[in-house]
Image 1 (cartoon, rainbow, N blue to C red):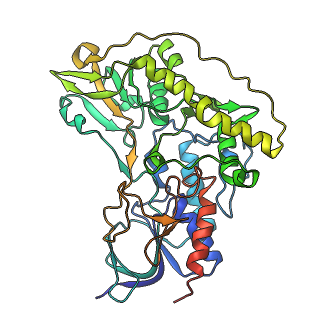
Image 2 (cartoon, one colour):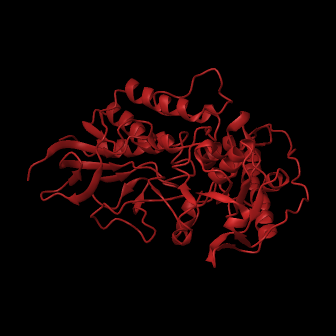
Image 3 (cartoon, rainbow, N blue to C red):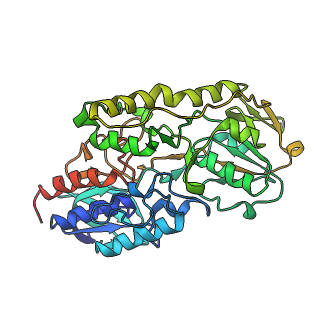
Length: 414
């Protein structure tokens, strides 16, 4: 069977694939990185116009090119981040072939792998899955019941309020994307409705540092201090991140504050009924759960880490949430509310359906140990909780990539 022979293929040229390429080059491993998009920049290119990185710039720790700019405490805008990744690929001389989509991965006839792509087949001895944590936008089945006159967009297609039709906008999902887009719409003077999910609130800063700083420290140094973020159960690998934003210098997003500013809050979206949208009737309970989550999950671990590592950190000085109780309604008539568009901030799903190999668990996640998949020569980098909370992040993907690249290099060269 014809095809191009490559010792090691890396599928995906986002931050995971590029970091892996860096370490493979350092180890002298001949490889090629395939990227389905025509230009580099990864899934960051799918973010809206006003998006800023949700972690401080100092968290950009790509191997060989950590952030060294003038604003380490700032939050890089989308276009600057895309440019940063393109510059990174150029500076490390990553062997990327863009505009090449992998659509099938099979076992090779004589070992290794056969990869079907939009540019023909490739054969490789080793292969690294680096397609990222956000390959497939998720829409609930109930979206099909929305009247055709209503524009529906997933967050990966939303760009700015000016491109939406006139009228109010419903955002479904209160994770980072949903909260930030609700703010974006509100700043543009749009009437906004927000359907709540189960994502936690968190302070932008805690005990003298950005909260993300503590999360990264727990991922990188927690084990040596004897305090780490607990590894979630398999389904928990896909839980949403804390509700914070990098806009306007960085801030936390408070659901009660959004309501005070005029955002109409609703419960969890459950479907349609006779032309109306139906939500769970539990807004106050959902807000309370979101507000309590940091104190129940992250705060005790961060405090324990600070104590165990002997870090001099100020006391907790977070402001309270207030007691404002927003008016809510479990039904929303789209016509009466003047809804012209719905933004689905309902997250993403992994998309490994193109793997013709028995390597996925019941959640569609590759079975692995530290990125070494339970199949000879197959590896993964950049997935949620591959090893730690930081595994898919700019701050942590390089560590996992280094480990995987070392395992690849240890297999010997072709």
